[in-house]
Image (cartoon, rainbow, N blue to C red):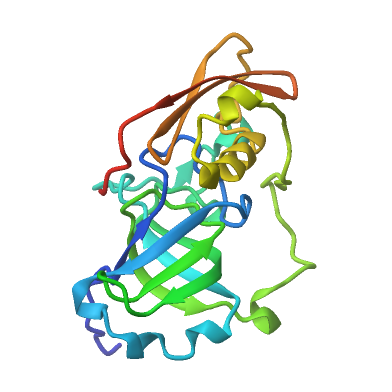
Length: 237
């Protein structure tokens, strides 16, 4: 068989989001539509011509790297948290970040195209599930006539629905957050950020988003916010 030269993947952009750590990031893209993020292109790719026509699409695919999950060796099986962390499945039957090339795929809503900013062209998107600073390798348009399959089977992966938990967020604590973060944080909490195998009503959890630390507890189907404090600013990775 004729040898094919391998091409080294290089990032074309970085993703900017309010997530400075992995805990609390939605388990899939599109689950929390209130989230806002930005695709900021690297200097070599800051040519507005590369985005000609992209505004005609409502959604995009982002191909990116789990930058905090890179490993020298890979395992053929992983333990999905949503199955309790004790059941092994084939890595290619999951969306685990611990895979040979640590690549992620996200479908996001295109909200705005900013062609001329001090950082060059920037895409503002909704529903992203990426850590701040995540390397983005490619951007492609989402095509509803071929990319959408309503009849598709979800296998062992539990379906996710918005508003899974009732969020008890007192007005006093909610008002500590900047107005632009309030809907997104409330929606994030409703998705239950805890690992699927943890159910400890007395445990205090902390969600970091946009430079704020939100402390909460979960009892049954009710999540109660107990603190909102200014944290460290979101850092680039």
